[in-house]
Length: 199
Length: 199
Image (tube, rainbow over all chains, first blue to last red; front, side):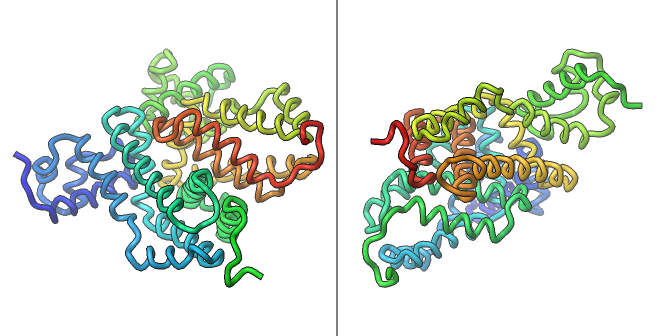
């Protein structure tokens, strides 16, 4: 009896992201999603068979909305032989992910909720692992210095940097955070081959 | 009218850690804490003037319980000139912090709750910043290679490693996580001076 209406479904999932970020996982009810989306009570329960279904689609939607647009892929490709461009690209990633505040906070809520819901944990694990593996494959196919461990260490460091920025933004100042992105790239990538910007 | 009884208070705060980790921030009520601690309904409200007070004391208590014992400080001191001992010490930190599962998950819940409560945010910020600064001061007073950025980058990478282990433990296997601790130490510390174990 689940109705098909992709646009309405996306609007409900987007509303769920806002509710999760603002109210936490326990605040995420069908009724709260209906209210956030400005639709009649009972709408969300027509679109999602149960609450886990909504949670899982919310996680997938955050990843979908975090996908870089094609111009950013272009920039990354250009950065493959240029340390300065790569550094800028990493600042771009942190800016884009950290800039989607509700989405990132919703993912943290989902991770905590996953400690209580094995089904959600399985699906989030696939999503996060798939994303990490795609990044490693991209890196290995590129001419970038560093290896799979570089990608994983950048993933670790930049994720907690974003946690810090979004949850306790005064622990590290903006300039400290920017310096940390620079240092992470510098120290984790290793030696670059000769490139136009290398003296 | 706040009663003084340090042992009882500590037991209540420890119960709050368990409730936070298991039920999330919205599940943390005085009543839930009373039930978790196995004390009569109404006890927690005699010890804490309001819910924020309980949240703040819970954060402080996690940090208190995460303090290494003196033997670990001894080990770290010995590690100051020995890369292999330092590597082991970092595995020890990850094991100790990640091993206090409820405490770490409670801290994540508190961070998310801090996005909604400015008073909690101020106090957690002081706590986290103080802890980070103590680590930097310790590092700078030691004979360890690396600098303040090294300490901050290790802090970032190891924190997200623990998030991964506690929330989605199958994203990175145990051996991948161990390899990442090794690689973080190796790549972020920089060159070690000649030491007994260095060829």
